[in-house]
Image (tube, rainbow, N blue to C red):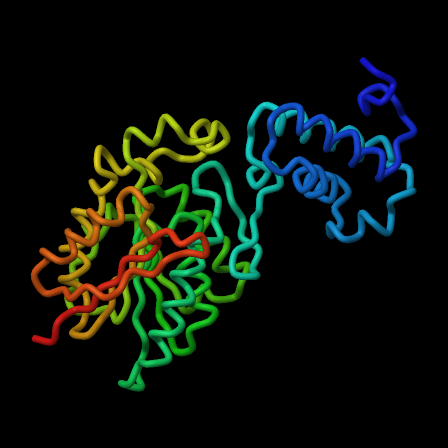
Length: 299
């Protein structure tokens, strides 16, 4: 090993650790080596990331170096940073994550932004009922419960371990009293009809062919159940649309995150669904179709 290896040298400053690790992770193919290094070192020091720069010339104690070495080793093996540190930011909130749930992506925030806008248009004056289908870590359900005034949110997921994570996040952000959690394959365990003003979902939409092309970090570590949408990317969505339609109140909305490959097919499914009227698909900042939306017809 070189003399610049933190596994050998004991007098490492915060700055030297960051520099060495950035180069090391870049050589290992990391997309954002500097950011990875900063997040992992802040976690090892149990401090905000910004504090690394005020401590740049400080020597890192050996326990910190040891913890950091292990984190870097696992990151170099491909384990996502969010799983290593146990959290990821979404909509300016910190969410606990584990390998049982997808790591939150910025694109999914479009669902929350649209949900907040729709809630502002809500006219009845009563409780605004929301369902998050396939809640995972609960990012959509919890964020809506926190930001949509007067909301009541049902979070559904087929995976009991995911619901444990979602409940923890609801407690973390003080919204558990406005939420209900249900283990269910889509709406299979929920019998009520015409109950929700808004149903949103980030369902599996990656095609089977695309699964093999995903980055190794995603393919090897994130739950395939939450990613793989089958041959056309719509296997789950084909079941979700009729179930959601039945449970929407008249003039209620359905919002679904999609990928560029599956978007057109999902739009076609909505167009052919009795009782739904498709609205314009929302694109993300890269210009890709990202949120397919539809409204329930008035009976």
